[in-house]
Length: 222
Image (cartoon, helix red, strand yellow):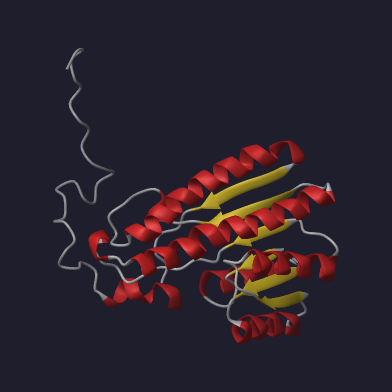
């Protein structure tokens, strides 16, 4: 089982769960000390876990983590591509080019590079496999103050659909999960600005119900 972004937050929590279920783990993250500490913790509990420090927005970093899985366990059957980042929420027009590139680098490019390396390994193994990418509500809606991340997560939805179609005949499943904002070290910027920044739109009258009111049915020709 391959887990990216495993050094802390959702990735570390998922790794602990997989370890309890008996998975053989390869834990990847940019932060070497964090992911090494987690691997040591899991091994102390009886799990088999290997840590890899790698920059997952590079093809070399993504491939090196997959190579570590093959070297340690001889095969790759499953992956949880959790690595991603967010930015302090501001209106989209205030977002800089550097912030946009940083968000798309890890949330979309890095996800694609990891997925590509994993799918190649699973296809070569001939036993199928399963990959789950951690997307988010930003892939489904807009208006939470991080248009750069939302654009990347919408792109991730297309990536998952394309990969699922490409690999179905090889018995490889590709899916995504879309959680809401989870309080982790990486999501603290969302909470620091408070629940309702001054520039957010006014709360709609239908908020708190199942959704916006239905538009009246139009007559033919309108």
